[in-house]
Amino acid sequence: MIDQLPDPKDRKPGTVNLLIRHSIPVFFSAIATTAPQLQWSVDRNGAQLTVVANNLGGSRVRISNFGLKARSGRQLVKADGLVGYVLAGSSARWRFPSPSGSYSGAVDIIAHSEAGLINAQATISR
Image (cartoon, rainbow, N blue to C red; front, side, top):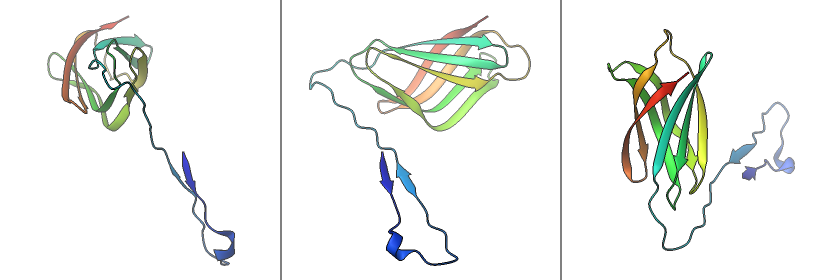
């Protein structure tokens, strides 16, 4: 985290001072790593869907522009921009509001990573 603080000497009456915080991810890895290998699962818990990505590969993956669609094409979840990272040998979990209606069954997962488009399938459990 990098904080940019205004200089107290530059304060003027009647002005607003801003604090700016930058979050910059830094990753270290061995030179020879295997590609990310994601396994997906989706659980319904009341009014929420929990999406879990397990990374069985040897390098991290950045997930952005995430979407979850019913096989009929109905959009169940849409999250633009950065969703998060899944580190090598670890998992990440995201919670989204459950769409109206009680959809269960097979879903298509569409997202972007540094390596390109992610297309995967999962089944909503519960």
